[in-house]
Length: 237
View 1 (cartoon, one colour):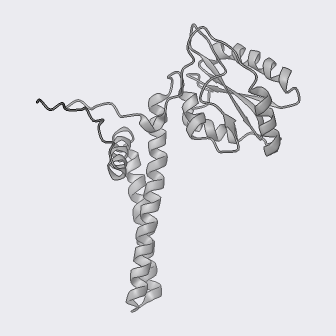
View 2: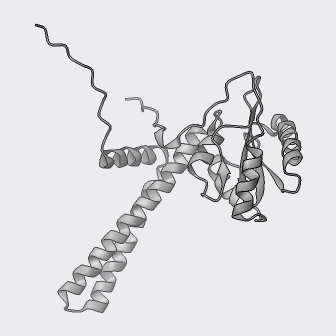
View 3: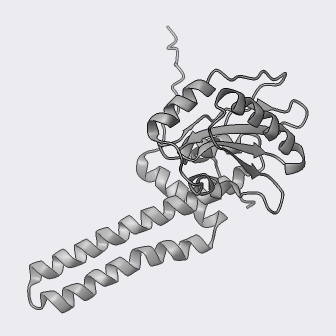
């Protein structure tokens, strides 16, 4: 009898291999990041060696502990710098694509915010979209697309929000090709920069009331892009 071979799904790369892939992608797309990562590793290690020489004297155990502490500190700073630079590279790759704002709302906002990767309204013709985030500053409406096209969409959504929660502040943020628009990588920081006026309980209450607000679109609403799954384009050999 012929043995039937069942197709097995490809094995996902391990944690170390994933980190190596992220490092290579970041280094290729952002060459300056390599120097920041090297500095982040070397400076804590050098500080540990200096402290070991100055404070430990002839104490071998003390020297080892200071060097190991510097090594671990350097590795930690290296990973922090790698994560931030990789995130910036990923956002730059998806910037301008439908659903890019949803990726930021999904992965970069703090837990104090209530937001969805799905937009609340989409233009069927241009695919411009409006996203909503509820936090301590109130309701923030984010327009994805040129301001000339999203400004009216934002105003329409503000009227809908004011009808349901009339006493809650509403802020506008534009993410698009305009020079004065907010860069995708700075969206989370921009949202957190607004003045806080609501408590945590009020944020939940406002979000629950707004959850009843829904708008239909004749085109499917684009789902947010996951920046952790963005791959660097293949380099020509």
